[in-house]
Length: 207
Image (cartoon, rainbow, N blue to C red):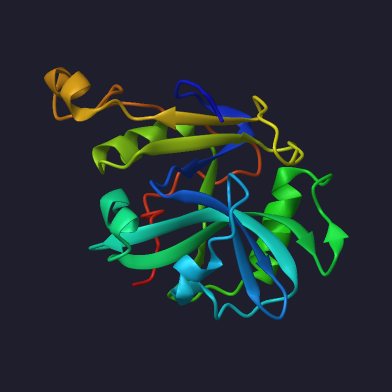
C-alpha cells in the first residue's frame, strides 16, 4: 500500500490502521484463511474457524488485543485475544463484487457480517482524515488508511486509491509536545449529507 500524508476530502473515507496480519478469509461451510503471500494459515487461528455467515470472501486483518488495543507482539506470540477485523468484501454467494465502488461494498459487508467477539467490522469516517489521524496518534495507534470512495478492488495490485498514513515513531515527534505529530487544533470538514466527526471510539472491538 502506498504511503501518504494526512488530508481531508469528501471523496475519501478514513479507517484506523490496525497493527496486524492482512489476510483473505474464505467462508463457506468451513473457514479458510490465506495470508498475503498465499499461505494457508487457517490452522494457526482455531479461534476464527467457527465464523458463520453467508458464503463470501472477506479482506481484513487478524489482530491480537491487550486491554482492548491491538498488540503486534501478542499477535506474533499468539497469546493475545485474537480477532478478525473485516474491512472489505470481494464476493458474496459466488457473485464477484470487486467491480463495485468501495462504499457499495462497505454496505454489503455491513449487511453480511454479524459481529461477534471474534469478528468485527472496521469503522470509518468520511472526509475528516486529519482529525482521525490526530486521534489515532494521540491513542498511540499505528495511523489511518485513506480509501477513495469510488475505488474498485484489484486483487494483488497496489494503487493510489488506498493510502496508509502512519503516525511518526514516538522518538521522532515527542519534542513537538504531548506526542502528537499534527497540530492540536483542526477544523472538521463538512460535506453534504455527511455527519460531523463523531467523538465515539472507532476502536470498537468486543473482548
